[in-house]
Image 1 (cartoon, rainbow, N blue to C red):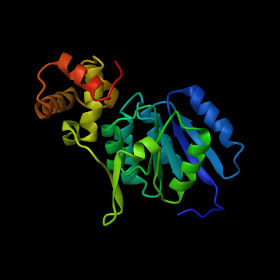
Image 2 (cartoon, rainbow, N blue to C red; image 1 turned 90 degrees about the horizontal axis):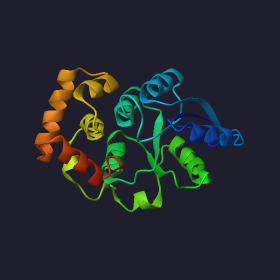
Image 3 (cartoon, rainbow, N blue to C red; image 1 turned 180 degrees about the vertical axis):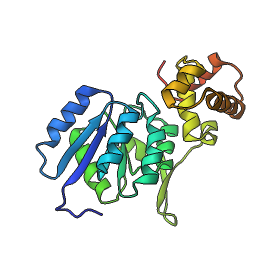
Amino acid sequence: MLTSTDLIRVVLVDDHLMLVDSLASRFKNDSGIEVVGSAANADEGLSLVLETQPDVVILDVELPGRGSFDIAEEISTRLKNTKMIFLTGYLSDIFIDLALRVNAVGYLLKGEPIESLIHAIRKAARGEYCFSQSVQERLIFDHKKNCYSIQSESMLTSLTSRQIEVLRHLARGKSVKEVARSMHLSEKSIDSHKYRIMHKLGIHDRVELARYSIREGLTLP
């Protein structure tokens, strides 16, 4: 764990280049934070994080490629000392739940002042949780397990993080072939996930699947 005098090495993974450039520029004025790299999609982000092994990774919820939660799960498994913060415009219970599932220590909304992110990075580097206030209000803390969980559950809670990523792709109108290409999986695997998703949610056609995803805040209308 870092001490208060250690330099915090950060990787930014977000496809909004203006935001990334703005954050990197602001962090240059902070002697305690060093941006060691940035990436605009999930695959490049994972490679960069594994190569640089930063103290903190800032991830957008929505990334081109495999998906943010898919790579976050791998980061969590392979780099035990790297802490993850999701920085997003989505205030959605299922995304907060997924962030906690992959052992992220933070979930911040993009409407927050940049000082809130800097404070969160410092807390994350110390292994502490950091949430936007509106996110914190949706959580409960288990003192025995020393961890947070989402207060309310939905049918989406029964889906794995990979199935959520597949669902989001399908809800945008992508074909099974396109989803397979994006997520570097076989078409057979995507078809299997699609069947399990529809079965778990009790949904039987793509149109209703898209409507459900929008209603649950998984995708934008």
